[in-house]
Length: 113
Image (cartoon, rainbow, N blue to C red; front, side):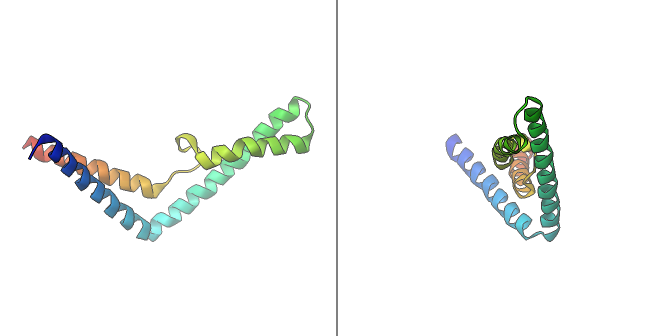
């Protein structure tokens, strides 16, 4: 087995561990409850950020309704694209990614022996 074939085999093993963990996470009812709480908290954060942006624009002298519209247009894309998990986290992906990393670590540990 060449080094490239070995790397591909390791990758497929880790990716299959990721898929198995993702399927298990999606079936976990407790994780769904926690995810819903994260989404609700994210919506609260988005509302607060939108109000802060709106207040900033109001202080500059713009009309209130116009400021609210601008705040929503600024906050909406941030909520959707969620830079650096500011508004919410995807627990399902986090659990799957952890399984992927753990599979790679297990391979490294087996190689050390």
